[in-house]
Length: 157
Image 1: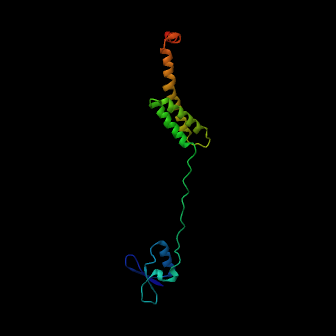
Image 2: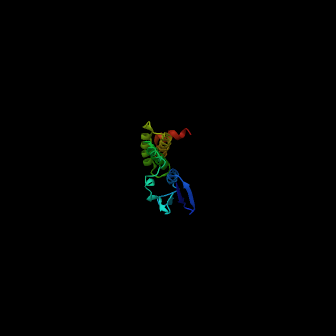
Image 3: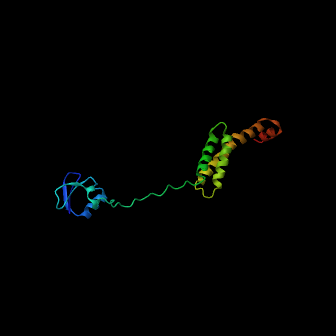
């Protein structure tokens, strides 16, 4: 049986060696805690008792699983969406539109990609950007140039 001086400087005990091992495992004691063994008069650190120098019983450590691997194509889908947005807002949008179409198409072609919605949005925005920055100005240029095609086209409206 043992007595112990707690962190609060109060004397606890008598307690069994098993109880001291539990308190040590729970962190309520440490190797510097003062202990008085039954039949002795000297208080000694817990570390000076051979029966308590074995490693304490520690509950098993739970190891978290590694973070989930990012699906391939997620970055491409996001890139396609960003370029699709840039295609509709920048002066040289047709360049951004072409890059957006390529990256979004690659992202959509990967079957394990869970970001297909982003890729589809990027593809749609990129195509709209390409139409608005390249095909519409080209068509308007042809129509405004006059000539037979423009004259016949506008006469119906």
